[in-house]
Length: 461
Ligand code: 2M8
Image (cartoon, rainbow, N blue to C red; front, side, top):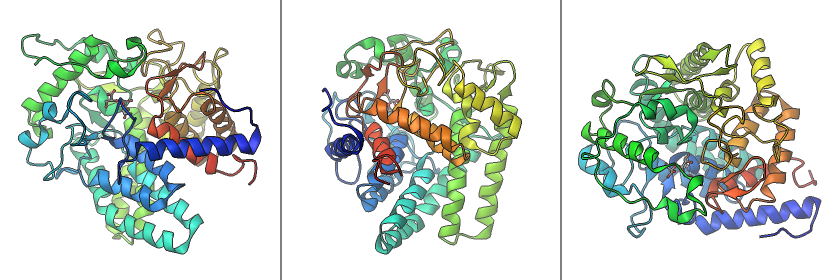
C-alpha cells in the first residue's frame, strides 16, 4: 500500500491510527493474536510488546493482555511460549496443541488451557511496569487500576522469574538454558546452526507433519528450511518423552544453550520486577532476592564477553564451547545494563560499526538481526539478517535506560521512517526495505504506537 503524501505530525498521526487498527483487527477480546493468519494464537513475548502498544490505546486492555497470558502459567512457574486459541480451525498453525500434547503429558498445565511446552524471553515485567507508567500519565483512576493489576500479577511474575533462575539455571550461573531455538525467539539465527547440525533426526521416529507457515509468506526462503523444521520437531518429541519435566530434560537433551539475550532480558525484567515489588509493597526479602538476581545475571554476561569477537557469546552446554555467531544477541549487555565503562564503550562502538547500524548499505540505520559480516548472513531469511521492528524497540528502550539519549533518539527516528513504509511487517530486508513475513504483525504495530506516543514523535510535544 503506498503512503499518502503527508508530512510531519499528520503523517505520524496517520501511522498511529493505522497501528491502532492493526491491534484492534488482531484483538480477540482479552488477548491479541500475533499476526492475522501466520500466527493465530497468543505468543508469550509478542504479548508483552503488544501490551506496551495497547497501553497507549487503553491501559486496562493492556493489562488484560498480560493477565490472559499469565493465566496459562504452569504450576512450575513457566509461562508457555504459545497459548493456543481453541477456536482456530485445524490446519491453521503447526505444531498445534495436539502435537504438543502438554496437558496429556504434564500435570503442571493449568486446567482448561492448551499451551506449548516451551518458554520465550521474559519481557512481561518490563511491559507490566510500562503499563503503570503510561497509566500515571493518564489519570488517577487508571493508575489505581494499574496498581491493582500489578498486585495481582506480581506473584505470577515472581514465580516465572524464579523458574528461570532455578529450573533453567540449575548451575546458578546467571545464564538461562534454553531447550529449543524457539525459546530464544530468534528461531533460525546462525546462533543455533552448529547445535542443530549435531542433532541426528531418526526419520522413522519423527511423526509425519505438514507445515502451514509456508502458505502465509510470499517466498519459502523467508522462513526456516525443512531440515531446520525436522530438528525443531524432533526436539519437541524429545521434550515430550521427558514429559516436559525439567529434571528429566536437563542431562540428556541435545540442545542445551545458555542464551545471552534471553538472560539479559531477564536482568532488565528483574529490574522492572524490583520496581513492581516496591510499588505493591512486597516483602523486603523478595526485593533482596530480585536484586541478587540482577547482579548474578550481569556478572554472567560480563563473563560471556569474547574479546576477539567483540560481543558476548552464547554457551553451548552440550558442546562445552561458546557460539561465535555475530548477531544482535551479542549486544545483550546493553539490554541488561550495569556494565563497566570500557565494556559499554566497546559495545556501543560495535553497535555503531559496520556490523550493525553503521553498515553502509542499510536502507535505514536499524539493527540487522545478524551482522552482514557474519558468513551465515542472509538478507531475506528469518532471523538470519532481516531487521525486526520490535527488536529495534528493545534496543531503543535499552539505550534510553543507559542514558544514551541521542543514540536512542536517532534510532527511533530511523525506526519511524521504516515503519512508514513496511505495512507493519513482521521483518524487513535490511538493504532494500522490502517487507517480509506477515504483514499487520501485532508487535510491529504495538512498538509503533509506543514510539509515536513519545515526546517529539508527533512534532507537537
Ligand atoms: C516466530 O516463532 C514461531 C515459533 O514460536 C514460528 O516461527 O512459528 C518468532 O519470530 C518468535 O520470536 C515470535 O514470537 C513468533 C510470533 O511472532 O514467531
